[in-house]
Length: 332
Image (cartoon, rainbow, N blue to C red; front, side, top):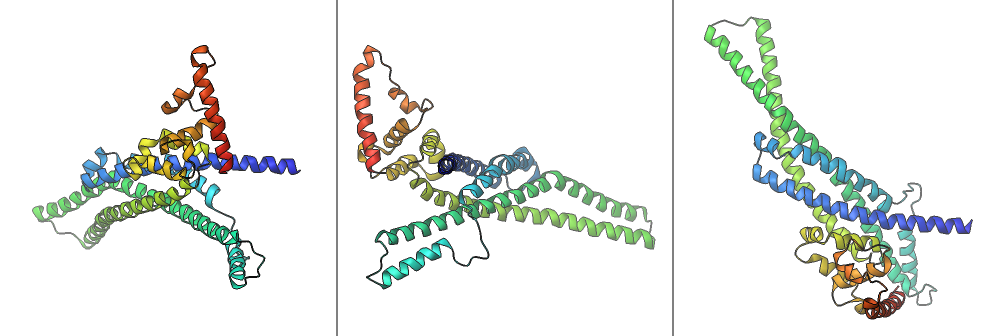
């Protein structure tokens, strides 16, 4: 049974590594797609013809249904813990009580590292709640935006056309000098009220889109900053590092010029022997911890053979690998 539990924990750990990698990369792709949509919307304004030409509804539909739906699922798996409404004491509360007893008494049996552990647990709790909450909000705002863009692109033209017909009908009766009877007047007034509501719906929709886009952009930015904390603490996640290496241009688009170098440098700051730059350190880490790095152009030079021409390089390669592996173990 213990063997089964060990296998189960190993499997879950591996799945979390994979899910975090997919969530981070897909979130960055969704953020980039949203930035492009937001920029184009500001340039096109509220003109319906431009909105249709820019395919806003199709773009927001793809962003919400194809990119972000899966992100929300993975967020629940990674960051949403079990909620026990009947239990008033949370794990972090227990940690706090232990810390309180430790600080109040010098004779406490609590170990010195409890302070660090309590801070770590609190940080993780805050990160998890913030990420899962923000991703959920973004997903629901994208759903609202999808409905609103559909409203503008497919119904606004009909509202405009119907309003013209209402005006034409009134003009026709005045032109012909024909008076409306009570029943006809009541019906026409009813039509005019509905027409007024339809035009108000269009105005409200445009205002909702403007507000929702601004709020969504803020949430994307906030969440990317929170995810950056998670990334900095995930240097042992070779799957995530490999994907960040592959998506360096995307990382730079989200965080700024040469952001990938700053991120990798911070992640492996305590491991100077791993390489000279952040990029080199991240590549070396993947080189020794991933089964397949052929997708990385930077790693191709490490794919050595056993022929005579490469014998010296192979020896140097193995020697460096051995030294680095020891360094990994010392810093685990």
